[in-house]
Each structure stands twice: as structure tokens, then as C-alpha cells.
Length: 548
Image (cartoon, rainbow, N blue to C red; front, side):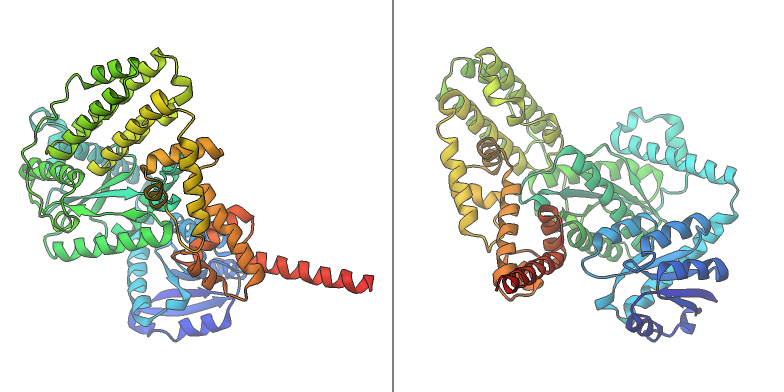
């Protein structure tokens, strides 16, 4: 029997979970309950349960602290966390501490609990087996996993004819090249910041978060038959799966659905999921790798998502862009301050990107070439200081391009930037920024994105972002969010509305995300702000009564 402990400071939750399922059917017994983390830790040391269902937000000792202390002393104990909808920052920390899953209290159902219990039991058995493995064996397996990861990189990256013989032999003998395939998972972080890409440091944190979510979801769907392969991407992940001869289509669809909804709900980012067909045997590794790369190229070109998700991608016949020497031509037009010439060069680049079936690597080369020559030309004529390198596409930005539409956005941004620098610097940007600012203020009860404001102002999103920050010394996202939070404060003061009603009225997808943004700008939650307002009102009434 698996010993289970339930920890929650709400009596109704404790009672509800006790009678939510038939514990004996799952070979489980409720060995203890506790109302706070400190009491739970004492009982854990005494009875050493197998599974612990623990609330995250408790008095005396919270759930995260309980997990940390338990992990130090009893690493084999498996946690299932209980949470409210507004506690996803804590959920993220719980997943980092290897909680098997989380359950939302308001959505507890027998079927959901039954599924999580079965997975928690398997995880407990796994940890028990690991505890019996010697340190030397564990280290050896860890080194083998590193070599396996490198071998998979070699298969996908390198030409098969140049594949290291020892690496290939190791991969062939590893046992993982049976009924295998790859998932390609690109992430779009623009939704988190109203259309603007997060900075490098924030994106690194986000990708670490994505990695945790992908691993947790893959563990639930594929059990131990998966591995993340480091492909050097900065906003996408590659997942290798194996031993999936049965139900590949259903498992792929389940993984796609779960990871998309999890990423969206917890982070607000967008995740797309594409996969190869399933292959069997080391001799098919080259075909699998070719399909993987072709899938990325087709995604870049804009093949319909539903076809790529089903693995219905076909090998394309790629064309050259035919733009050799375009960088030197742009340099010449900039140094001559020839606005029409600059626009003509940029338009020809845009036309070729739109009209040819080319590989992403060609577009990356084009952007790097145009940005390098633009920077040199602007420096040559002495106006680089007015533009600054931040306003040209950075190497980091170019490296994170996944689609043809993103390439076109960067070309349009460069075209507008050069026109501004060479011909209109200091004249037109103010009107554009003012127009966008007014648009936000006139639509406070809508979630105005950078793209919507740019469309209203008649420019690209990237160009508006650049101009707005230059004009107001604040990013468009910060202005839009801070303005909406100021308006939310006004509603909290003057309207008798629930926080959830205000969040919905202002266009936020859920109360959790609204509370997160509110706390960022106000330093407190909406609930605390309401309490603060009421206290101020009471203090004012008391002061008035004293005066009278």
C-alpha cells in the first residue's frame, strides 16, 4: 500500500479530497493529514509517506518550504500540489522541485485525481529504484545520456557522410533508435509583452521555464521515452521520443494539446508543436533528420499549421534569393542620401523574400548583410549616433527568427529606420508616437497590442516600438500596461466591481495574469489595493469626525 498524506489549512478541502476517490482501488491509504507545513514535516519524519498532496499557501510553513525540506531528507517522496488559480508563480517553483503535477482546487474531479495518483505512484517507484542504484552506476548513466544527446545532435546537424564513426556506433547500439521521431517546439513570447520581444535576460529565464514545462508534459505523456536535444535554438526546443510503435498519432496529439494549453495558461506565451513521422532503426536516422529540417523550413515559409502538426510536410525545391551584392548597393545609396534608391533596394529584398521558395538560412544571411552595410554607411555619413545600433536588427533578434513574416517585419523596420535617419529624422516620429499613445488612452477597456497600435498609426510594429521609446523614454508595452493599471485603480476606487470583473473589462484573459501585472506596477495585489483604499477612507472619516 502507498501511504498518502494530505496537507491543507482548509478543512473543507481536506474532507473533500478524502472522499473524492476510492483510495483502496489505487492501492493507497490516507496515513495522515495536516493543517500547516510545520505539522506536516513532523509527521513526514515520523511516518515517511510515499505521496503527499500539499497546499502551496499555508500558515506557519508554506508548501514550497515543506517541499524543499522534505526533498533534502526524503528525496523519494512524491508531491502533488494543490493550488488556486492565482498561484502559478508558486506552481512553477513546485514543478522545479519535481512535484509530479498540480491540481486546481476549484476544478477537482475524481477522474483528474485518479489519473494524477497513478502517475505519482509510478514516479514513487522510479525514485525508489534510483535510491538503490550506486553512485558510480548513476554517474555512468548520466555520462551516457550526455553522449547520447551529443550523438543525436550529430545526426541532425551533420552530414551523414561525415558523421563520427564512434558516435554513430554508440547511437546505433544505444537502443533508442526504435520507433522514434522529433518534435519541433517554437515559442512566441510577444504575447507576454503586448507584441514586443522580451530582452535577452528575460528570454533566458522564459526558456528555462519552457524547458521545465516541456519536460514535465513529456514525462506525463511519453513516460521515460524522451529526451530534449540541444539544437542551439534560443526560442525553440527539440524533443526526441522513442519506443512509440503503438498509438504514435494519439500520443503526439495529446502532447501537443497539453503543452500548448499549459504554456498558454501559465506563461501567456504561445507554443506551436510540429513533429516528424515515426521511424525505426538507425539506418533511417538520416531520413528522420531530413524531415526534421524540412519541417522547420516549411514552418518558416508559412505552410499551414494543421498540415505540419500532422506531419504532412513535403520536401520543397528551394530557389536562391539572387541578391548577391545587395549589401554594397544599399551602402552606396545610403552614403548618397538617396531616399528613393534606399527604398528601391529594400523593396527588391522584400519582393524576393515574398516570391521565392527559399531556405531560412538565406534570409538570415540577407538580414545580416543589410544590417552590417547599413551600419557602416550611416557611420560613414556621420548619422550613426542618431540611429544607434539598437534601432537596427540585432544579431540576437535575427537569430530568433523562425518565420518568413518575421523576416519581412525586420526588412520593413530597416526600411523605415533608414528613411527616418536619412530624410526625416526628428520630424515624423513624434506624430506617430503621439497617435499611438492617444489610441491606447482611447481604448483603455481593450487589450491594445503593439501591432494594433502600429496598424492604426500606419507603420510596422517594430518601427512604432523604436519611435515610441525614443519619444517617451518608455517602451510601448510599459506605457500600455501602466495606463491600464492606472485605469484599473480608478475602477477599484469608484466602481463596485469584483476583481475578476475588472480584469475581464480591461481585456485580460484571466484574473491571475491581471493580478501579476497589477502587482508589477503597484507593488501589491488588487485585493491589497482595495484594502488600502478602504483603510484610507476610514482614516479620512475618522479625521473628519475629530475635526467636527
